[in-house]
Amino acid sequence: MAPRRCPLSASDMRGSRCDDIHTVPAARDPSSTMQNERYLIASPCDPGNCHIYFSVQRKCLPAAIALARETGRVLVLPPLEWYVDQAQLMANAFLRQTPVPRFTRWSDLFDLTYLQHHLPVIELQELRSSSSAPTAAAGALIIDAAVLDTASVASFSRAETDVGGAFEEQPCPLTAAHGLLANLSRVSPTRQYRGQLWEAPTIIRQLQCGALSPRPGGTVVGEWFDQARIVAAFGLGRPGGHSNLGSDAAHREIVEAMPPARRAPNTHMRMRHRLSTCVDV
Image (cartoon, rainbow, N blue to C red; front, top):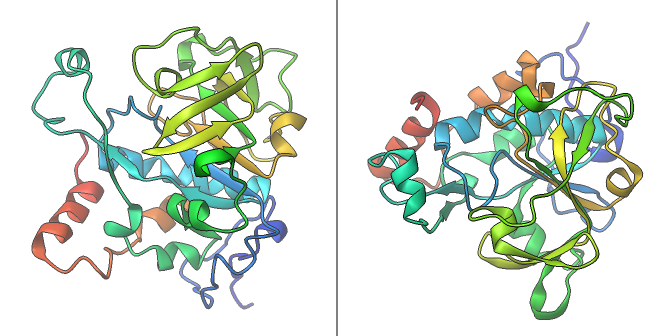
């Protein structure tokens, strides 16, 4: 029997699994059908308060791949987040300095064409530059719905009111010193937030906080999220979070097999790739 090939159309891949990740079909142009696609912007970070290293951000990627496949969406990769002197300072002293985040595109470190053989993937910059992406005044990208994972494993208790076993809502903090809720302003009394996200103007029409714990066959978050065209999941797969959807070995193998970026022309960039894949901190 010929090995299965991974689906490349987001609309056809809900609940799919690739049985042989080493079977590599021809890559498609991920922007060719952007007008009709639905998107998942997935990050393991609370943007602006992300103190996990490249290697850990990379290890969280299988959870994003799994959720994109389960929900039939194009996976959108926001940039990796890092800080100057991040490795030299203890966490508490580091936070007291209110560090300014820096960003590096995934394609600066990894050859994403390999990942695109297995599922539709684009980077956030491609979505922002697409004529099909909804924008508001001043070119702000509009995210229709977003979930911020704010709960720890210890505080998560599955309630009977969970929708599809995927999300348990908790109140969003009214104030925050760092991260997404510090960088965006709430438009009271709605759930809309707006401000700078990844160094660009962004509007989130509806943001909810809580415990995000998607599982195969139970990834429904709610109509407000599932029926939206562009959604975001912040804290997906993060250490101490809830997503166990990325436990599929095939998803992990896809990520582990990503080669370094072809355009990384020198030893410095290739060393950064090596550190991002081999160092656990």
